[in-house]
Length: 159
Picture 1 (cartoon, rainbow, N blue to C red):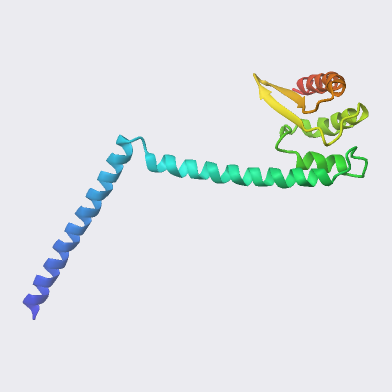
Picture 2 (tube, rainbow, N blue to C red):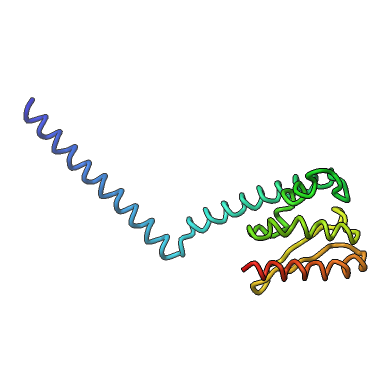
């Protein structure tokens, strides 16, 4: 019985060594493949994450746009400007300095005839912001440009 146990233990030990060798070999083959082909597994994981985040962002953006449509067009209600700014975070700058400037800018835009039906967009280009209004009313756009420039100048002076 003792010799059988020794042989069995020896067999198990050899088997474990073979198993470990196989796992190490498989791991090395996988690593070499990933290096040789530019880490396709990691790229696929990143791509799936990026797609998932984009879908979530688009869904939130659509929900926010539907909530914006429920607001008064002239944002006359109490707290509606703040609600508009919080719902429109995808199109407006998220910089902390803009938190104090955006409500005043929205109030100035409302004075010239801007409404929530005219989407407000911001681009960050060449180290500065560019504001745009999407509307067919050229007079509103022309009146908005000096307001945008005024607040861009105020933002630049905050540095």
